[in-house]
Length: 224
Image 1 (tube, helix red, strand yellow):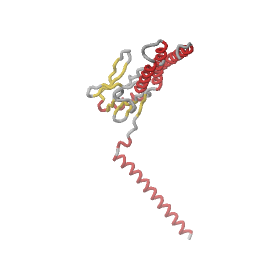
Image 2 (cartoon, rainbow, N blue to C red):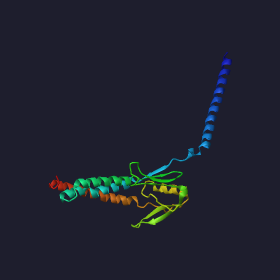
Image 3 (tube, helix red, strand yellow):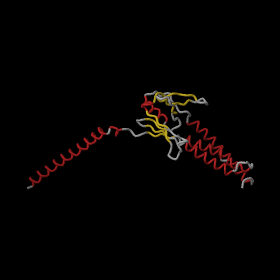
Image 4 (cartoon, helix red, strand yellow):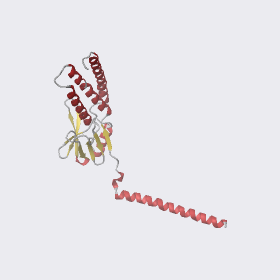
């Protein structure tokens, strides 16, 4: 009786092992077939690059430092432009600047794309899309301040500015070189981080001066 039971146990083990091999083979074959049917399944996910937070904070802070005293000065000097109107204009300008700084660069196997959030009107910031197959060359151009920027030139003669103030710029130009074959060894960002750090430091000083000026005016009773 015990011998008969041991034989049954061995047969069950053998059957379970065969069943596991069949199931495993099924999943392997299914995976290979799915790749043959849809070869894009192994396509890498798109890379998304955003504007450097240092640049965004610096430019937004500079805007606030330059414009926030204006309504107070308008009231103190009895200027013809009312402070309320200035506040409205400053607010609109801040939103516009924030929208311009919300740029995103998306790179995938098909091409490179510059986009903005859905709330940004297309007439203000439209963005663009350029397939890799349409890229003819990457051409440098000198700016009015002596800097160097780069433009994608498409086969139909259109120029697209290469975003140069994003986080991960080195990775971006590496992807451009991989997808287009264009040598990007000598392509560098338009401005180095230390330049914006210096600008941010002076902006903070300017904000302190603005705060002291407004506080002094209020304390003297010039502003109620």
